[in-house]
Amino acid sequence: MLRRLKTIAARAGAAVMIGLIRALFGFLRLLGPERSSDLGGWLLRTASPLIPVNRVALANIRAAFPGMDEAEVRRIARGAWENLGRTAAEYAHLATLFDYDYLNPDAPSRVEVEGIEHFIALKDDARPGLIFSAHLANWELPAICAQAYDLETTAVFRAPNDPAIAAVVHEIRSGAMGGLAAAKQGAAFAMQGVLERDGHLGMLIDQHFTRGVVVPFMGRPALTNPILGKFARRFECPVHGVRVIRLPNQRFRLQLTPPLDLPRDAAGEIDVQGAMAMMTAVVEGWVREHPEQWLWMHRRWRPNMISAAAAEAPAVAPSPVFKAT
Image (tube, rainbow, N blue to C red; front, top):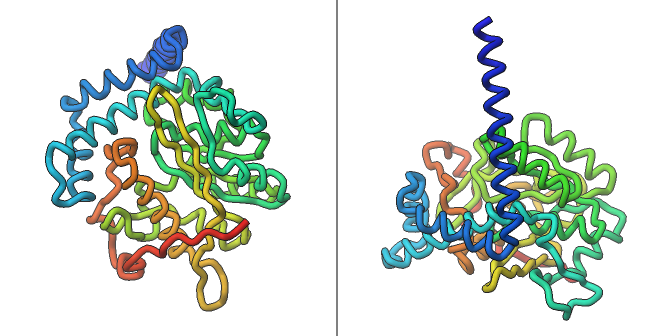
């Protein structure tokens, strides 16, 4: 009986929380994308010194940029919190945030796209493809862009820890994106199925992965999910990077790279660890260019979890080479 009451109470609590989050998103929709972005950015930027995980962000920035002036370290951290607040508030507007028209690229729009020809080529090449990205600016926009131009893409995502937030975010993502695959046990089989159907996978590769391969990132070894490298090796398909840059006046720029020329082993097959090191090197370049737009609060580097596998990591990440198209 007590267990049943606890279950009922938990479900009721979740329902109330979902209702509150929906109401909050409804309020943000009434504000419009610009004002809600400004509000979310201001709230987190202002509150950031009081948030315990801000210490992680500051430590990460100091380690990535040794010798940087402390005022600049704190400026980057505040900017990262502002970007996170803006991104969170912009979830209420994901269905309408992307307004770029490649048939009329000079028309006024909130979003501009560089490399749209690569999106079009991926759509028309009748083969699988892989797209990697990172938690920069509003990282949800590339999947929305793919959906807008009928590029069959499945976005691999990690659900928020809070079930109520996860439920509402999934509702919003489902209405604005194409396929979605949760990063959980067994997801690799679903991802493989997408590629076997000549579909495309999009994935963020800039977070810690306990069972990953060791690659250099921002001057330190980091564990990275190797699955895109494994799929690239198995399917011999193009691999592109895509990033989002937050511009002034609540605008964005998406940049899709040409396909990478990934390193190969002695047998001529794509080297998984080298491939992940090259993709990570691209991400590092993006982060160094706009450090205030990256998610520094994540515990990306965990030295105590890096074992003898570090000895096999490339001493220096391969320099990114792009194939001509």
